[in-house]
Image 1 (cartoon, rainbow, N blue to C red):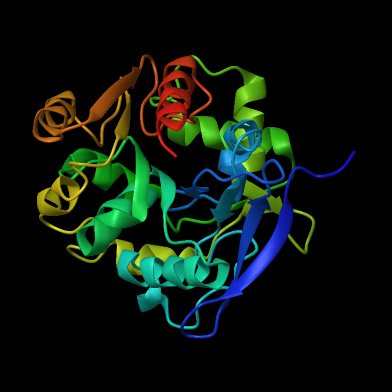
Image 2 (tube, rainbow, N blue to C red):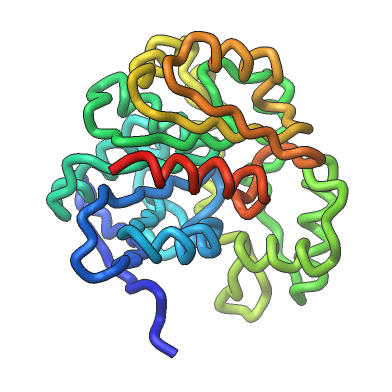
Length: 288
């Protein structure tokens, strides 16, 4: 069976070799491509089901930020910050001649989207922000800071799945064993010694834990730059990062925002939930 995507690479401004999955979409497609931007410790595998579905009508590009997946690890861990990631993504867009696109950003990927909008909102024909906003709950940031960069390795996928459950059970209280196994396979890889290890550079934790780096202090102007861009905000009903109050305020200040709440899920929805896919599909039907 032919693969739904191709592995491709581009070069960051500082010379790092970075990887992306390229779902070509239908031949002759004219609609704006979709750019999927993953979260802090994640990679392109997170978007596999959604990207395959969207690729029926559009090209989908899923980059892996430096230090994740098949992208090269940075020599200087200080470069693991959103402004550098944005510069990397802009190099990819320039390489591919893309001047307008739909952004689907999970957590950190949504922060990147807002920061890019602050620079030039005309890039976006549509936006999906997945459980992220311009004002974040300190408790959620503290929880993420508690596990990022901790490392560890496991002898089997079952052990890895149990480890995922121990960390994320509060966010996914209804997950089955199969779903925890799927999460483990999206998050870990088989290392050189045959044990399972996390698929990111543990060095990303260093800048994340510095004040103001996990999320810039005032992102409301960046979010408001999207006010004329059709936007979907997906929020986990159990989220400890994006409060219901802030999500409501975002809906009030934005000119064209659809709020889709995924019940019984925390940070962050996987975007395969019915509430999320319905809202995303409706957005993609609207925008060119």
